[in-house]
Picture 1 (cartoon, rainbow, N blue to C red):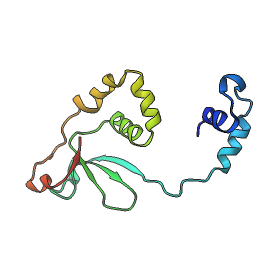
Picture 2: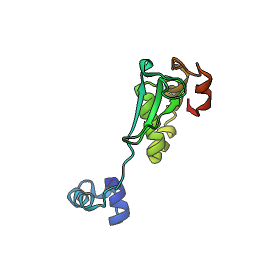
Picture 3: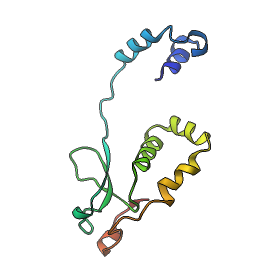
Picture 4: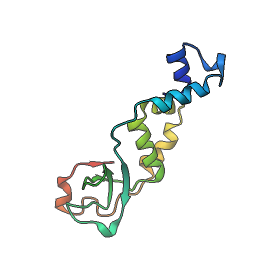
Length: 134
């Protein structure tokens, strides 16, 4: 939890009142929190040379570590595409704040409208057997 949430939930106060007075207590709290037992690494890959019909899409997202999971993407993602995907899927509170600022339309063009379609997308009949992300 964030420092501000710690102040509210654990101490019943707010940052506006105590500022950084309890920062050391918060750091101790964080150090003693139970750590996540598992983490799911996620990465995006675009490599036209590794394309193999129905097996290895040229544009895809890997979920996990040490496995063959590849979820095809129709579009060639930009770094901001990947960052916004991660924020939306794993940090819903921060996403809620982001969309409340009414800037999402500006960014959405960089996530959808202005992206190139992946080379080899549905080039083969075998590719049509796959589900895909935008």
